[in-house]
Image: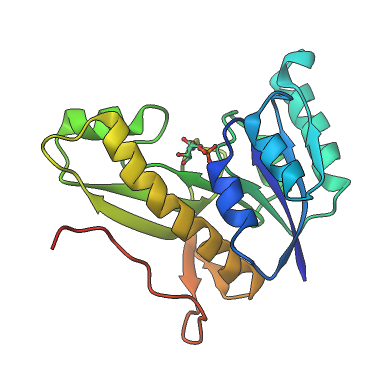
Length: 211
Ligand code: GAR
């Protein structure tokens, strides 16, 4: 069974969705760059090992990433899952985990990388928004796309209502993408992801369009 390590920075709702999805993986640990992250308490309640590598205790990005990598590697994961991990990672760190480091981003990449994606979507007046699971490359919020889910944007949406609609989809597609990885269904070819889902046990992804 594949081993995964989940990295979080805060609330940990995506991490919780992964822990509760009954995936065919061993969750080796949940690690946060903030010891006070609420998600660590949730992980501990689920009986998962937790650790913190506080970025504030390291003088540079490189030193923090080295300490983080040492902690991650002590759990010998096959896959490292960024779930609301809000630190920019160095190229050295990203290259070390090439092909086994994935992230979820609350937008339909390549649109709206970075922060405040729901505000940006409303400002641009897009009619469709969503979320993306992707392999991580040194460019922030960029890399081969594994899965996406789209949601409608309504005229009376606020960043909060839109975030809630997108988050619901995040909680569906992230566990699903990890299941594909666990079942060896994911192939990275020419910087594109092909997923063999002919025999997927997964239910079809629901998309919340109005009737
Ligand atoms: C999620 O919406 C995730 O997509 C986003 O942070 C939130 C974390 O929530 N990640 C990024 O913006 C990464 N660029 P959570 O802690 O409840 O999972």
